[in-house]
Length: 382
Ligand code: TRP
Image 1: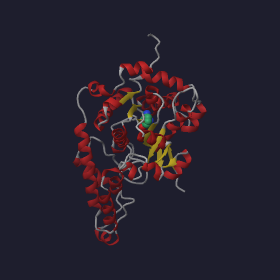
Image 2: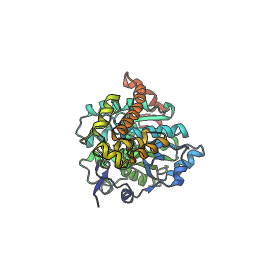
Image 3: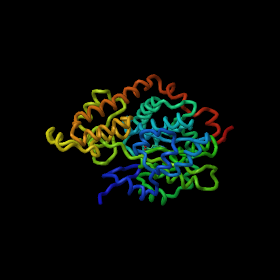
Image 4: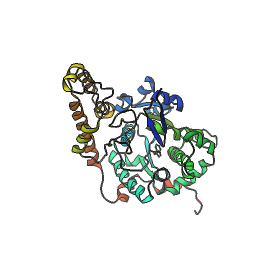
């Protein structure tokens, strides 16, 4: 049996996604749950990238009844964003457009300070750049809030303090392993705050958290707290995804720290072509004659997997690519060229919406308003 580790702070080995659900106690998505989302379903649902969840139907049934619903999905600003980072946000944007959901996007700069070897100046710079990418996604500013832990601490800290009193060191150790410093030991109370913010502002309602499966431990801690009588909130639901494959293949997640490069949101077409053609693990045969004769394996071909996961929207086209690849009609280089083109199309559209200019102005429409702040904050001096 192969070994793997998945925590919010470490993903290693060839992840067995089904065994992970047993470990975490989450459930594979059922056909019924899939059908309960707005139709036609987003490619990330249709292609099984989002593959598991918790209490998904609380969200989908309230959404289809036109009731208040919200989505929380965040970002740890420890570096420039790559393709894997941005997909949950595009998914959230789709779901917002379909359901009118509020979207809350917390940026956990404190968490990254506690867990990475970066100073706050560096993290704040990443935060500003990541915010530009989040604006580029195209959320509805009326119904979307970006919250930065240290910059919006007037709202975040008092709530986190309240929840922190309900989280024991034993829970933290059992959920994440021993924290390397007290900052990370406290942080689960902060992410709990993120996941409950929409309900604290807009009253009790179903929240869905679409996120990569490594973040599920944070959701579990929050659900424990939300279950306590004295808070008038319901447990947030979770929609959990597999990782976008790394270019080098092998089952880990696309990551900025591995050997093969990631594709960044700022990469131009030429860079994408080069990264894919040089580094994408190929399911093709070692030479063209053998490939023509015996065919390739799309299941392990990273270029195909990227197309399948998200970048080729058309179902018939993905099926045709897989079929022609297996039959040896389509060569590895051709699959890579197709993937690079689709990815570059996506990135060019993203980049054309990415705002320049002073970050305060760019983000203003998405910040908590004074009224919202006043509602969430303790009124010590008022
Ligand atoms: N912890 C997440 C990460 O490291 C970022 C994050 C902060 C988040 N708050 C969140 C993700 C709320 C989902 C929901 O990537």
